[in-house]
Length: 191
Image 1 (cartoon, rainbow, N blue to C red):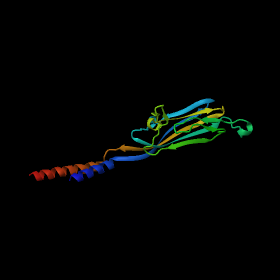
Image 2 (cartoon, rainbow, N blue to C red):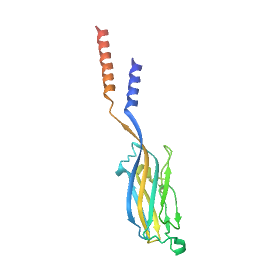
Image 3 (cartoon, rainbow, N blue to C red):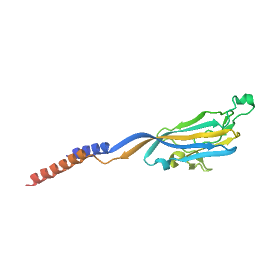
């Protein structure tokens, strides 16, 4: 009987736990780009990400640009939309785009479960910034063109969410019947 109770408790735990994969999204739209240094960031906690219960698998950043004035082939016109992407949480140090025009640039990174995701360490090798644990993701860039608008900055964080749901009525009914049967059996044995 003792083993039956453990078996039923285990089954109840499996029924009450549910895992679901989802993508948490943050979008920034229509941002004129000034020349010089600029950055974009998001706090995924504000959009439902919980590092304690969610397992983050990957982050993808989509940057969609458009030209204010489409002057055709920029190389022939002597103008280019020149961007430098600086250090990002996932390890890129500097990426140079000499002619962005109207296009989407995507950056992505994925993690294995339990992998160290620290992005910045101090002098004593202590993690000072972990984007996965904090939920804060960002990108920095230097813009050397006055002819660009950021159509959209789109962050997509893929997570697996484990939620504990309430047991169904049938499970509760079965457990109560088993408990009542066990009580009646003990009462009959005692007589």
